[in-house]
Structure formats: C-alpha cells, structure tokens
Image 1 (tube, rainbow, N blue to C red):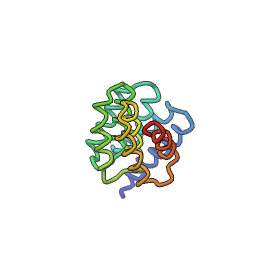
Image 2: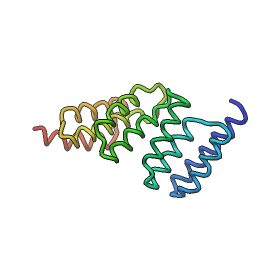
Image 3: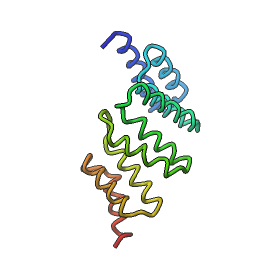
Length: 159
C-alpha cells in the first residue's frame, strides 16, 4: 500500500471515530481530507453516512454513487443507498440496491442487506419474503439479535 493511500485511510479511520462520537462536522472534514489525498470507496461512503445524519439524503446517495464508481466491489454503498431510498419512502427502488449489496465481494457486515430487505418486506406486508431475508441474515450472522427478534415477531403474525 502506498504511503499516500495509507495516510488517506488514516484520515478515514479518524473520521469514522469522530462520527461515532457524534462529531458529524469533524467527521466530514476528515473524510474530505482523506478523499483529497486519495479517493476511496470507504471515505465516500462514510462521508455520505455523515451527510445522512444532517438530513442530506440526496447528497448521501451521491457520495455512495461516487464510492461505487471508485470500487464497485465494495458493498457498503449499495446497502446504504437502499437505506436512504427507504428513508425517502422509495421501497421498490431500494430492493435492487440491497440485492447488489448481498452479492458484493467486499462487504462487512454481510448480514445487513438481508436485515434491511427483511424490514422492507415486513413493511410492505410480505411476511414470507421478510422471514426468508431474516433467515438469510442468520446464515451470515447466526446470533444476530435483530434478525432473531424480527423472526420471532413474524412467526407469531404468520401463524
């Protein structure tokens, strides 16, 4: 890894830490600095995530599109676009983004798109599809408490 890329990823990691403490502006500044050094899918995706905290959903989607253009194998921006579209109420448009995230070669945590598709299907009243997605989440992360909780609740609705 080049020294420049290493430094860029260092700014991305620092931005992620800032974001997790609630310092959205500080995180955006660090992600931007990272991108100035070397554009990475990670920095674009996480800057988009920070924008979403500010309610800037369209900007967040645009950042994810930049991330995908930078590294199509990175799954996080596909999942994030799906989430942003759900926030906007565009459930149908969100589905293919979650499906793409599930197929992405480089994505952690792998069970998130399954969880999100499960939530989407449950919101639409398609309980069988929701159950299938939550079971898929458990195949990727067998002890995931969210998937377990949703499955338990949905089984009562189906029976």
